[in-house]
Length: 130
Image (cartoon, one colour):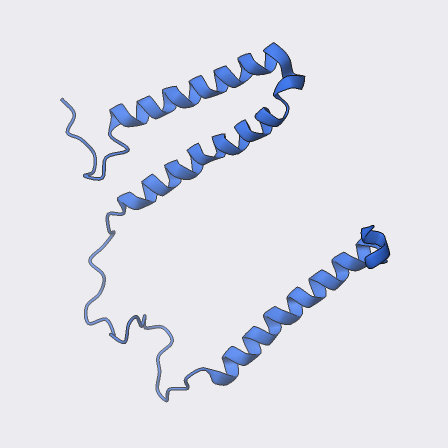
């Protein structure tokens, strides 16, 4: 049915998609270059945020506990994608697939318990070891 509506080869469709995407990116860059604010004497090497120029150099590395939580979320979120794929093929996989999925979930559960005990999931930073 789709072939009757759009009689085009898959390679040609890919080429059209790539060309349109590149054209849109080029158009955005050209428009941004044309309408951007032009400041005389602007220094491109100085960070500029919220209209405030920095007065002092940075104080060194900043603590970012959110990054750790986000990284752990991505790692453990991948298990959902893998388990969805397993759920689709659960009947075909049979008991062997069920045992493999149980082992997979068990390993992830052990990793989560380790991270919890180690304090990696605490916002307050690392715990004091006794």
